[in-house]
Structure formats: structure tokens, C-alpha cells
Image (cartoon, rainbow, N blue to C red; front, side, top):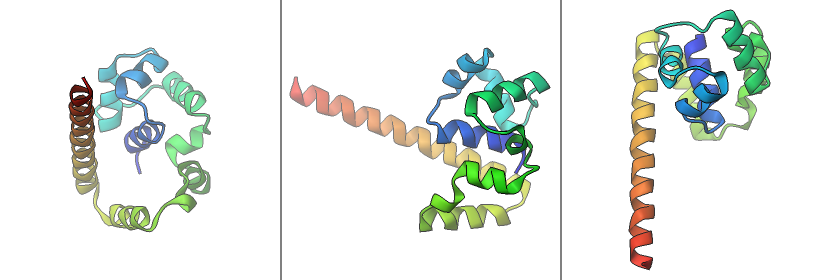
Length: 127
């Protein structure tokens, strides 16, 4: 897995928006988006800041220590369905991984919008 996917995974696992991570890193949300898509790579100082922010070793960002990366991602705590997804993901080529990540982000965005709509419906019913 490349650093772009690792940054996106860490942000999502910590339930952060790109804007929230950008504020913490003192960069624009567009920079976070560029890091997560691999359009640009974070510089050395940014990598240090990311590692500090997420309380991880820099090895996790660069996947030099795979066992540390797995423990940081909680691979042992995955449900059966999550393990299936991870296994499928590992077999995909880089282009299809990017497609899957993009589609996953789209689905998550749609889900959050639907959840917001539902909350608004419930609030209007109570009013």
C-alpha cells in the first residue's frame, strides 16, 4: 500500500474529515486530498507531523515495518466481512485499488448525506 492510501486510511479510521486533518497539519484541505490521491507526496516535515498526529511510527507511513502497520491498523480486530474486503483489496492492481478507494469514498459521502437528511426529517417531525 502506498503512502497516499495509508494517509487516507488513518484519517478515515480516526473519523476525521480532510478539513479537520488539514487544520491539524496546518495545510489546506486540497493538500490533504492531493496526498490521499498521490498527486503530491507529503514532505519530510509533513510526514513527521502526520506520524506525531496519529501517534504512529514513520515506518507505518512507508510500510517498512509491516507488522507494525498491521497492528496500527488493527488487522486482528477486523470482522469477517472486513477481512474479506481486505483480502480482495490486496489482490487488486494499483489502478483498481484507486478505483475501489474512490468508490468507497463516494459511498461513504452518500451515506453521510442520507444520515443528515434522516436527522433533518426527524427534527422536522418533532417540531
